[in-house]
Amino acid sequence: MEILYQDNRILVCIKPAGILSTDEPGGLPELVRRELGDSQACVRTVHRLDRVVGGVMVLARSREAARRLSAQIQQHSWSKEYLAVVHGTPGSGTFHDLLLRSKEERKTYVVSHPGKGAQEAILDYRTIASTSSLSLVRIQLKTGRTHQIRAQFSAHGYPLYGDKKYGAPEDSGHTIALWSHSLSFIHPQTEQPVQFSALPSRTAPWTDFPQLWEPTFSQGGNR
Image 1 (spheres, rainbow, N blue to C red):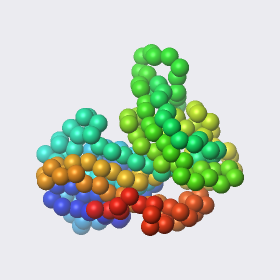
Image 2: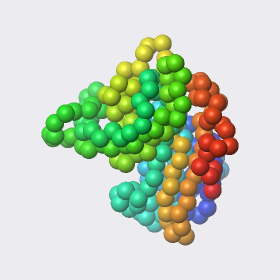
Image 3: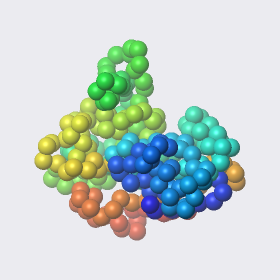
Image 4: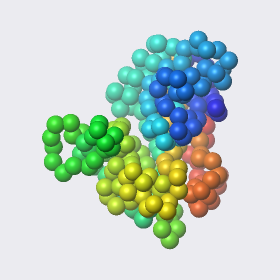
């Protein structure tokens, strides 16, 4: 468990892929308490990452901090940036779709017409680099729907590397190449803007894009 920052109101860490974001046995809050050496520590989930996704997450260290952070999320005042490796070359632009979640299939679909349960989904994206078959993409989420990035890129013909559930080739990797790269929000106590970022580990397919680890790539690093 890598902790990037902590004080008496927030804790920012790297959620490992394969770990649930929610407070249940084996979930991220339990792992954080174990790292802190205090099984009774107040550690509250205020936002989520898909189980298969790793990267930067912030947790609240008090009830009031959780309330204030949750209010910011409801007001869409957080900035969330992801990195992904996708099949194909999507270029740059905006995906603006309607998403419908199937609880039975545990899968999200892009639909063409409004209807019961359909939700608006918006994200901006920019291709940073490409190989013969893959592209490294920065993604700025404007809405936060379940499996939003995975479903939208797949529907537009650019499935995420390793994401066989959403159309990636069978010979792609076993780990989905989606990473929570950066979070920006207002600190719930100081009321000052803060930003935290981290890069994925040097493993495939990220290593196909060495510019990830160049000093010019990061927008200010962790703070």
